[in-house]
Length: 150
Ligand SMILES: [Zn+2]
Image (tube, rainbow, N blue to C red; front, side, top):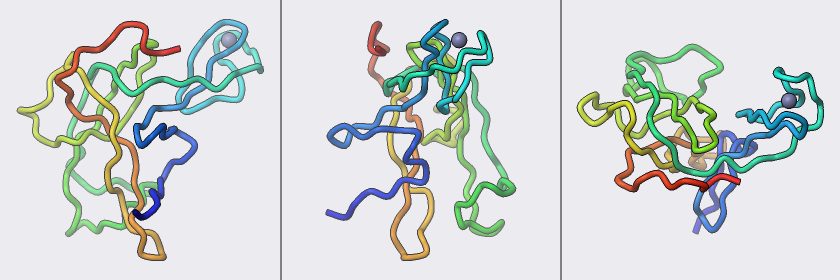
């Protein structure tokens, strides 16, 4: 089995192949950040701890990215090979809203408030010809469970 190369290894953790997002939580006031922050914009605290944000949430808002984004977007696609993708904010059980790629680009399959689950999707090819993956959220039939975050 080939190893999984992630475009954003600091943003998630793989536990037995199951991904979860990693953010940070202010030790003083409890504010949660994604990506992880070095200081808290709410209380100016500088003691933040790594925080597992889990792998499920609900779709809070979404749109379809219909044209090739400008750098730093680095998928390797060109204007001719680009394929539209969904992008949205997913509200995690901790309450934080995470901006993410979505697995669906079909407006008929996306609705605000629907349950979403974190997954890993192909993103681009490395210079060595290895597939590089990133995270995305996919519609999930599973109900969002309370207390899944820590
Ligand atoms: Zn704080």
